[in-house]
Length: 527
Image 1 (cartoon, rainbow, N blue to C red):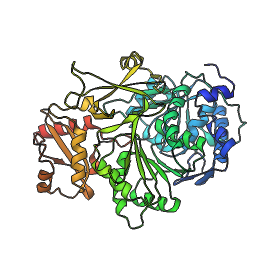
Image 2: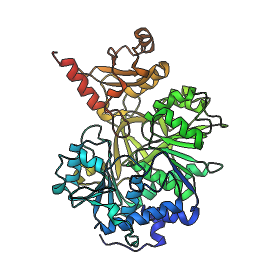
Image 3: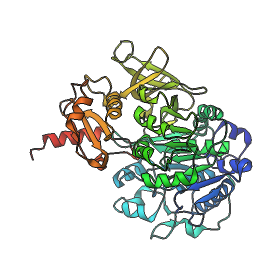
Image 4: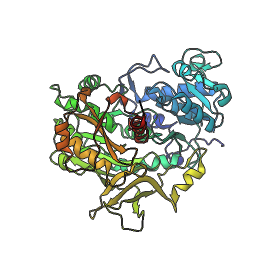
């Protein structure tokens, strides 16, 4: 790849992470960013930065990466302890024209090794803690070089030793060249590496910019999303370009979240759905940590109506709003819909949204020749410029998902006569005789507040088995359970497990395939 000098026309057509902080600083340099943690790569930066200071740190780290030998077009895998400096380092890598590859800190060593092999000799940017975890991975064979953010280790360069390196001019990729690589959640196996370009990233901002334009005033935005996830890079771009103060969260324990919110009073929060379920108990906290929140936003999994209702009722703002966007890492935002305080509790949680202005076209394709409906859901497909460019190292797998430019999401559902897309299940999670596992989960969780999680998976004989977790792992009242599921006589007896034993991804999605496999093993174990 040949680096291109920065020019304004390219910036307008693509989203370039490497110059984003600089661009934002020109307009809103004094805008604050507040963190609930310290930065490993920048220990002196503190927990409160301005956008101008953020741009300076990105420029500084870009110079250090250049001095460490990172060059335009090269891939640099970033795999370190969860921290906002992951975003800062990715932006610095992009500034020198490299392609940051975001590897979740939740990945095990074997998975990291497999992905490094697929990346064909990338640089690895990590920390001493992760080097210990990767001790049995042959990094010398799999990587170009290993760079750590601080400290020292034999065989690894350290960014600390390059402090004070000369600054370098930013480099822009072509609009359709790789700009950043993220990965799928890996719920069904080894994660796929998703290639995003400046053009696809810019396209994904359009529908969300429209939604932000409906806000009467700028709000402080709290973001609690994995720092390696593609959604964070869109969310940060929106906040920086729109001049919205940001709260960046690593901590997820409810008591720490409450303290942080009470001190900083966010008006908008973007959080993983499963984190919101974990924080649901805070709606009864007499300190009212959600009182300042006008807008709740979630873009990963559909969230249960009961949870939305309790969150909306915990806000002290006039007419609070919960906005849910349905999409996936490969396609970005596809459809969305608002929920309101008075009606959220009785909303059909499977109705995930309507077309958004400036967003994707969505269709549902028949699976067996019948018109898609609730009883015969079809394949959900998406088409628009925001679709990711490729799966790195797996182009055939990527191409297999495309049909005339339409991307098959892997979900099944149907459209109502009002035009609402109903997403019923992942295709791989469909259980014979069950209209929608997710619908059952929505309804039962709304009836039994003692449940912290409910997942319906396929058993050894394809029977639907409800796996349940309760708050504080208390025993389930079986009479209350039978009453709650009376309309679902096809459900097998519930299996209760501790919440901590649920297999999850880095975005807290339940690994349903893995959970189903473990159930099968336990049920057939002669012991």
